[in-house]
Image (cartoon, rainbow, N blue to C red; front, side, top):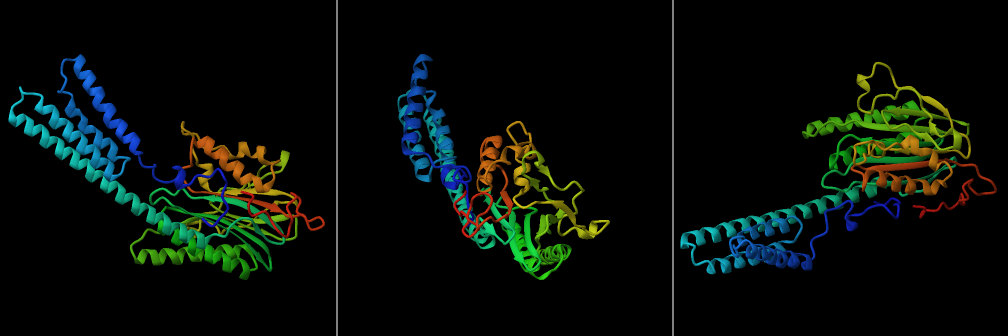
Length: 393
């Protein structure tokens, strides 16, 4: 994705995010031979040596769900020939019954081959979609770590990479004349239209973060960008979208400005003080300001030098375990308060995968924002301020 990844993060190659790997030929042949022998043995015990053979037609159907077209064709040919050979051994059958059985096998096997071909074609289309989405996201997002005079930001972005479910999670850190501006957002919906909306709001943030002196003006610019995008989307028949977002403003003071537009609230990772830093109700998401009874306002919270914040998208907080329980982010946060900031994203993602019993079902974006406190040119976590460890994840 052009962004740092945890070494334990899934990829299409290991079967976590992409389609399941195709069947090996050894597996296909063992299924064919094993099932044929099994039916023959059962037939002997039931004194119906050949009457169970037509049930072999289910094999090509099973193989078509995971195997290649060639494997399905081989399975279909095996089954058809086995059925024909069995019919020759059943002299009591009429010609009409034998022909009907063979025709049924041919039709059923043909449908299995067609299903395999359709599935393979669809997977290729999905792969092309993923490739296009990945290329767009590489252009959108900068690799971690990100650095300004006030902040050192580690993180992780792991898209779900399944079918058209690629999402619009975005993040950015900008050094401006007014301090550092941090942005993390999540576009409603999935697929390339969501990425398009993400590009619009991210581009607006990169421009407004430098040009606008106040955080409210930055958020107003993001609101206008979402509304413009929705207007263009409506003209081509696409759905309008909103964007949840969290925008922070960090200067030389000990307090930080924040505007939460319906997003997951940040957590402070600081020993006994670990927990949420925003306690008020969030504002409405970007694109929905016209529905809000009052304008968006700025919250302030203490963020001392050497402190660490954890920011994330709802792909983290809404991940469910097999029983349906959400991931308890706040409960787990205390565990990471003593972990080096560069190691926190990988630790959170490993824990998230354990909770979800596999890869989460939504895009996952994590940012660990460290308030820099330079001592003789070194950051408080031991990372050289002039050369952050890009391979921390």
